[in-house]
Amino acid sequence: VHLVESGGGLVQSGGSLRLSCAASGKITEIYVMGWYRQAPGRQRELVAAISTDLRTNYADSAKGRFTISRHVTEKTMTLEMSNLKPEDTARYYCNAGSAALMVPGPTWGQGTQVTVSA
Image 1 (spheres, rainbow, N blue to C red):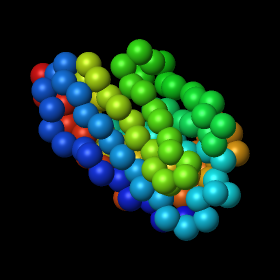
Image 2 (image 1 turned 60 degrees about the vertical axis):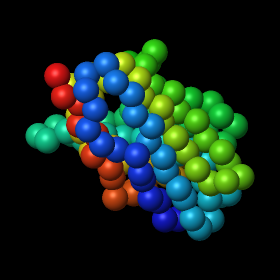
Image 3 (image 1 turned 90 degrees about the vertical axis):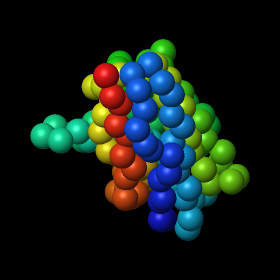
Image 4 (image 1 turned 90 degrees about the horizontal axis):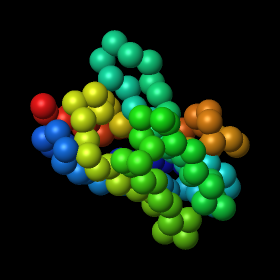
């Protein structure tokens, strides 16, 4: 599976962004896809994940502000982010291949940078 993210950028605090992940390969064999992020000097962390039966898991920091969705047939996943805060600044990575909503799978995209200015 090959993953490509898009949609990152610079936004002011309180603004919104939409991240997309396009997958190619044997996507029908992937149960969980998710978004993770990593800020400088910090560990990579889960933002949100979604299964093929559309069950979701969100980090506490994302609840109420971010929405993950997935189109299984079109092999795409999106993350709608609103009310962004400076602490959301990080590189966001698409992930696939996990069997659970709380741990990452083996496949990562190259990441897309999200920067939120105060």
